[in-house]
Image 1 (cartoon, rainbow, N blue to C red):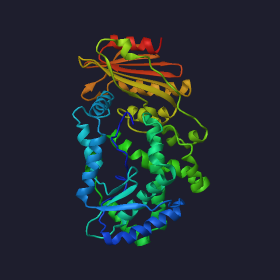
Image 2 (image 1 turned 135 degrees about the vertical axis):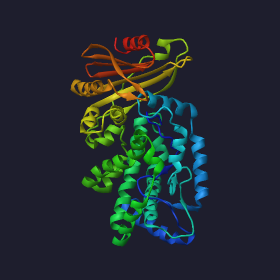
Image 3 (image 1 turned 90 degrees about the vertical axis):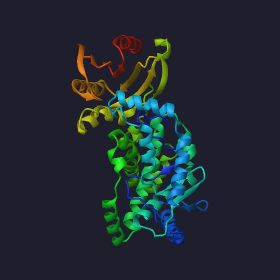
Image 4 (image 1 turned 90 degrees about the horizontal axis):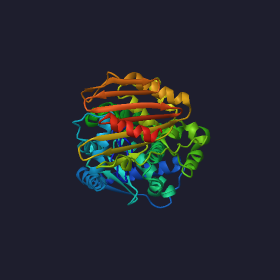
Length: 419
């Protein structure tokens, strides 16, 4: 999975951050867990094809399992490239230890998780009984187990694992489904007294690591839950669980479809966008470090690196049609980031171009103030800051953004992409 703001997540569907966590269930509470499982089976309307397994663990045991999985999936080289990308765009500070942040976020409030490889739910077991928050979390994880029995989650996620837009859209479907089931459990599976207790628990829950993380990290973590449930709810309202189940046979292809369910319904697929072979073009010691798709969601957050979030920024990103990005470095430490995007209409392209252009100059990104360097015309703009150059051009439905170490490299890439 290669999102521009890549969150290292192994093949585990983990519920965290959105609800207060902290399992405290003793083995004697297995009967209560069975009751919750049976409620989910009935109300999610997915039969239990085989007995759902769950194992009770201590907090230390569960965290040890998670750390082992994290280390197995961690790619130091890819994470380093992602860190440099986010720094260039001003989305994270230069001194951020991204690896430590991912690791801390990964274990901050984990109460349990479903492992599709082992087809088992792991939950923390201490001496106390189940809290209301524990019940909510378990209902969520049981939904994942049922999804896996019917739709094979690993296969679903692996269909196009190198396509970040696809990976995150599938995760949003999976988590949105479980979030909706969890919400229904809140309203119909809990008593009013339990709901009152849950609200009190929610107010007392603290997530200091999450709260202090850069916005793009926080937004990327919660997107599958918040936007995913809105996506699933749009179909549930019209056709119930039958309509939701049909989506698994024709899964969404992009976060654009998650954000705008009507685009999924209409079959508005991402447009294929290509870049030339920049490694060959530049020669020398230039090497490709990362490439992929940015997508509507991350392009909006890129705008919001120096513009307060608003309906204006949402609308400026909403006309996204497709894109391709590439990040390269050479042996001297010079960097090159290219984002080539295609928009649904020329008006959509101009809306994004104008908003980016109007707000880039004078902004302070990682202690570098970007100043307007050359205004070639209404379609081309160049800025500079310290030892970096930003080039922006619009051509019909296309917008080209280049951030690199010098203007000569920018010009060479520009001529290759937009001859």
